[in-house]
Length: 274
Image (cartoon, one colour):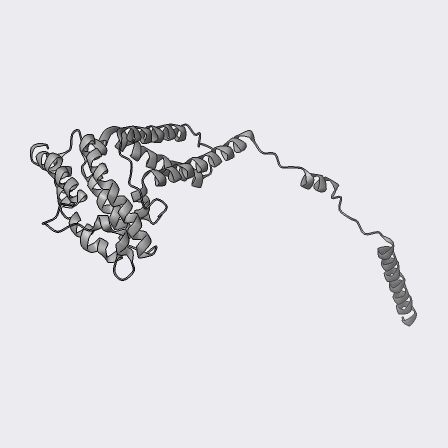
């Protein structure tokens, strides 16, 4: 029995050494990655539709940015009110030629945006397109149908009041600089109101009534509120046009213009037109 066990043990040792030797002699297999390397190095194909969509999206972004820049410059009081003070010394041009030019510009942009093929755009970009198109459609509707420059006296009264209030409500610059901008706008207001008289072909009663209320409350803005820019800072030198004289002196041009605006346009239409 001992001999048998001995031979069995020797056989197991020999077998183990043989397996180990074979394992050491067999080379390690390496996976063939040549095809994978070729796939990795290849440039992914981009469909023509994807390229076209990318170009259209970039075009939309440019059209939108150009429109907002154009709008900011053409409506300086609105820009001041929104915190952009690049054109603080200007009022909006409401001459008929300029009104028509702005309306045509918006309409042509709207047609361009409507023509864009957005079916294959990403979801977020399609939402941007819809929102921008809606903005243009709103402005285009006002220009074609509502025609506020011809029907709503508040357009001109608000241009005057907001033109000053937008400079007062926040201390974005020194009092002197804001006073200079306010003076520049004050000087343009009589011509603006005169243009408004010419533009208002068919003022609506409700609009005229609201404009009367606004126009009659502007004096406090031009006197008390605007004078907050002057005290102890030398800004009073820039505000001669803002100081409305006493009753014994000639009336201030803004006061006269608002009076004419009230008498000629607002009051008759506020009581006779519906």
